[in-house]
Amino acid sequence: MNKNDPNEKEEFALFQTAVQGVKKITHDTIITPRQQTRTLDKTRVSMKETKNHEFYFSDEFEPYLNEHGPTQYAREGVSKYEVKKLRRGIYVPDIYLDMHGMTQQEAKRELAAMIAACIKENVSCACVMHGIGKHILKQKAPLWLAQHPDILAFHQAPLEFGGNGALLVLIDIPDKIQSLD
Image (cartoon, rainbow, N blue to C red):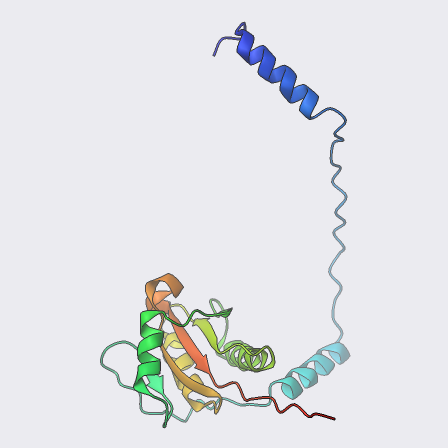
């Protein structure tokens, strides 16, 4: 473009009138130094965590999961059609749990917290992204999920929700009894 172009001068003049009176934004973010947690605080936090996550996932219990094909599970009494809906992506997850980089202990804790949050928020479908990596969480996550009494079914997620590195989980949301007092 030519600097002597009259259209460019008009556009620049229009721009200047449009931004007239605008103040420059100042960067006012304050970054506080991270405080060291004392051992007393750590024990208090760990006690709260154990209280919040009542369900314990066992590493020794291994439910029967079909090893051929994609990872899938349906609790007894749950229609296989529900698993098919998960596979096709008809259920869209409202909560996502990304377990990349977590240890097994952290992953168990976060998985239990996610299930508790789903029940509290009435979310019936969640996505657990375990990743592929060294296949540790990929192998353990389905075993843990199959142990939980509130899990109806799960299936390897469709590609749009993580594919081979994720599971779509269907959670049993209990009906809340409302009193008419």
